[in-house]
Image (cartoon, rainbow, N blue to C red; front, top):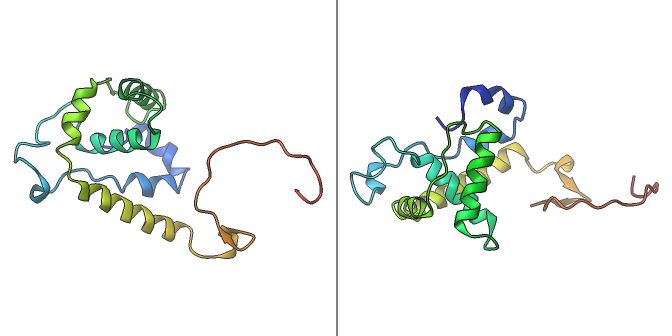
Amino acid sequence: MLISPSTSSLFASQTPLLPFLNIIPKTLDSSQKVSSEDFIRRRKLPFPKVIISTLSLVANGNHNGVDHHIGTFFRNARRCGLWPEAETIHRSTLTKARKKVPWEVFQAILNDTVQVAYDLWPEQPRYTWHDMSVFATDGSKYTLPATDTIR
């Protein structure tokens, strides 16, 4: 299971998030496995969590080391209830697991993510800003003057 049952109600209220979480594959197709032994045993880092950890690491950028990022990632996963039983792993564990995942898995995730985004936010005026699509936001916060034009 990707998310714990106790957090499913949390995501039910956050409708756009759930379809994106469902994009993460639960298993690796046997035709894509490097070895037939890959991802068959119960481990600290099962296949879906290898994918999530890798995506998180990539999204983090290069300004922090893998050890620092993994520790932060697992701590936050426990705190927010997404992965309550998460135990921090050694960076070599993630490195070894990542090399067992073919790049095509990530390509499929990207394609599915784009499709979900188009399904959730179709081309409609209410999803644009001054008739321009908004592709990303960076989370910056600016305090602007409370003028009529800005309002």
